[in-house]
Amino acid sequence: MPTSPLHLNSLPPASDSRIVSASSLRLSLPQPARRFFRHGWQSWSLAAWTDPIVLPVQRPKLLHPMQVDPVHADERSPHSSWVAAVELAETDILLLGALGLDAHIKLNGDQLQGQYDAGEGEWLLARGDETFVFARYTDELGRRFGKKPERPAPRVWCSWYSLYTAIDEATLHCAFDSLGDLPFDVLQVDDGWQISIGDWEANTKFPSGMRALAERIKATGRTAGLWLAPLIAAESSQLFREHRDWFLRDVKGKFVSAGFNWGERLFALDTTHPAGLEWLATLMKQVRLWGFDYLKLDFLYAGALPGKRRVDMPREAAYRQGLKVLREAMGLDAFFLTCGAPIIPSLGLCDALRVGPDVSGKWEDPRDAVMLYNFTTPGTRNAIRTTVNRLWLQPLVMTDPDVVYFVERENSLSSEQKQLLQDLAHVCRFKATSDLPQWMTPAQRESLRRFLDCTAKVQRLDRSRFQIDDHVVDFAPALSLPTPATGLARIQAALVSWLGNQLLAFKILKRIDDLALQRRKKGLRNEE
Ligand code: 9PG
Picture 1: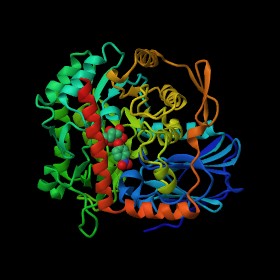
Picture 2 (picture 1 turned 90 degrees about the vertical axis):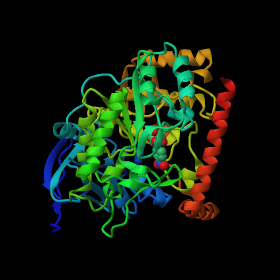
Picture 3 (picture 1 turned 180 degrees about the vertical axis):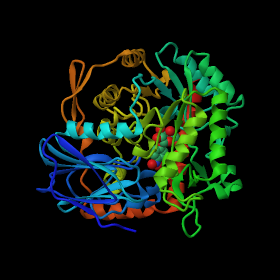
Picture 4 (picture 1 turned 90 degrees about the horizontal axis):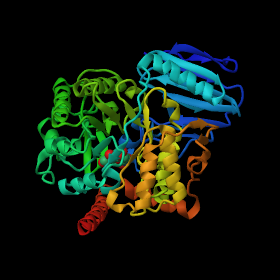
């Protein structure tokens, strides 16, 4: 039964806050918002300070389930998941933040409107400067979900951003060997080792098996890391074909889309299904038995998609139940990085959280940014923008900003742009790269070593600037949003976005990607 909203007409005074309980809440602003802080639902979704306007709906729609909260993708007011803030004056920020799992916020004219989907929940209302209001929010979240233990993040080499799915036993062995004594704590094998998304066994490119691969990493004195996406399955996977009843459907009985990737439709595991949960636990134990102690679990949003579950409960609660099972089965002694994960529902159950979309060797893709208005796709500007706007999460979880680059190969970032990524890693206190040692010059190798060895002193100066040891970095070039296309470009954009929604066009794009990968692989082989 929807209850009538709680109207709040008086705001807390400066540097003060209060907590109220309501399923629905309306807050009248004393003056129009100058800027609006919107917070995307999962790791890859946009978080940014913007003008208080509705942003064009990002395209393609086919990817909404894997890029934004699909339930609120078409909102007609400025919209935010769990927490929003408005800037009334330069140091007068008003933050409305949910302390529960299933809440979202809209800015409707001069009202901030908060809504819990499934009954009453707590809200924090804080007013003051930006540092104060976000610190109050993390304080209250910390009390409910737990705070981050004080231990440094491991320094990670990950296979994705140089090799993508073109990994195999020989290529990885060669990379591991050439890393020599570079101070990495973890060597993490990313996407490309598995038979299929859903079928988490070594494929034919790894004839010696996963246990041998973990052994090989451990023999270098480092922790073995592995990527999996346990809450999704590709349509062609054996898992989906043999256990259709484990997968999430809508009220009409149709399978809920978990997006489209690897040239295939993806479906979501129902994390309230007892047999599905058991399978998840067995998988985690298996991976630990192979010898992997650092787990990057990806595409986790699938556990919180809307649908009709075996056990009826709010979607975020279902997700959290799935995450608990994963965590308990892998053990507290494993390092658990969540990725593509709904933000607030992941707190307290993982060690680290990816807090932005993927970086890439490109600054920005104009097609995605200007035509599709999509800030979720891989690109260094997108990654920096969202990560900087999620730094307030630092007291709660290790914030993973994704990898940095030192190499020139397959990379069009300027040295300033690469430096921004390295500075962001210092700010996040989370350092990773995918650079292949064979692609590095001796000077780049030395820069990487210095980067890994250094614990920088970091101080935030304002929304975009940080003091890092003896230099000041300004992330401003990454933070703004490009203006949407107008005139002819708008028509072009409409055409591109229509094309982007067609499965066939998607499959062609995937084929082009595959060909690029094959070329990359060939290049690597020739160098061996
Ligand atoms: C492996 C990769 C890497 C990477 C992850 C994730 O929105 N998208 O279409 C989208 C697809 C893939 C993706 C992110 C977004 O990358 O973040 O580090 O592990 O999977 O496939």
